[in-house]
Image (cartoon, rainbow, N blue to C red):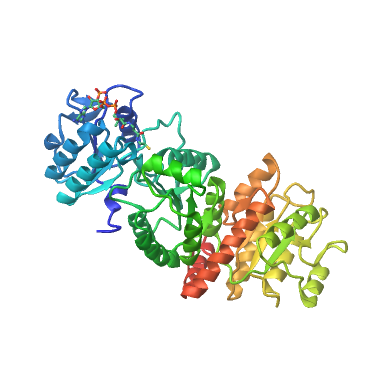
Length: 483
Ligand code: COA
């Protein structure tokens, strides 16, 4: 049963129980979202209505026709058990319980949640929630969030899955991801996780073809031992980036009153994340910075980084940022330096950082990357700082650069991760976005890019230890070189 939750993400039939006739109420906005995007069959249950927003409405689940995959429950907590019992009798596969008023509110709620689990088990159903916003899947239009599209952005389809215990934070992240243009494969918020939890989600996403990287926001874990066992297995196949809050004593207390979770000692989490091959993020931006990098680039075979820059100052900042994270920025061999001297301007710096200077033209960056990627020096990762605003750089740079990188990857048996930095304003942003659409993740500062390279190095180390490094390199070759 663990991980068998596909029907929540691509159901054929969904029923909203507690659909409301009144705009602005949770049960109304939820139905409105589903009605606009869901591509399957949709029904509503409300004892007072025949239809809401054009969706056929029934007085109870028993009178809804046909098979039901998912019932989204948005009635007050006191009525949830009755609805769950009805759903079980009706053969509903899964419940998504949006309602609050369970474990998170103390003894009475805890008892209600216990009974809910009992009913769900009795009928062999699965349950997401209670106290959650449920799921959002751009590909199938399954969206159980109750936040209207006028107020909340919904990202388009992409290769990052995001699972969050918190519904509000999860929704805010979706909104931000939509604005930033980050695509999502699956989003799930499981709230009190009375049944479906991180373990189910990890096991499911491990085999989900649409997901390249799994990101998790967690406050605490109930089944730590099982979670880490599963995590260790999943990270061999896909990177898992985790943002865990409740790091401080006061934060742990807040987590406990939010979803009733035990946050546990942060140092223990930190150690076990590392031992399980997961990558830890410390903020929302970092979670997605790392996810983008890990989704778009291969793991690094070692920790030797070469910086290829158009600006000297950024090169120095990049060197600091990488060194502070324990990565190496080694001097290049004489042979590589000589090759670079031959193609770069006389006043360019052919060491590491390789600084092509503000007088550079596209070809300097293109020839330099070729030399670096084919050099006898063991280059494990490249930080690329193109500076689109300098006069000799043309709008064709990204295309020429990427073509050369791909040519080298095709002709040699090595691939290395390339992570870009584009510090600048609106002109720069256009070309940074273009580079990203071509497969190179771009960041606004060397510090942010350095953390991504560190994640690629750490992940590479984990994959080498577990014997899955080559599997990832092959997969990268298949996706990147055919892109
Ligand atoms: N079956 C189906 N529909 C029912 C019903 C039943 N047994 N009993 C009542 N309803 C209908 C109501 O008539 C109402 O429709 P109407 O507005 O057209 O009259 C609708 O279901 C909702 O019921 P209502 O009593 O008005 O509840 P509500 O909308 O005020 O609150 C919740 C319901 C679930 C939103 C609220 O209890 C709750 O838990 N809010 C918190 C949600 C939250 O934050 N979740 C976590 C997010 S992270």
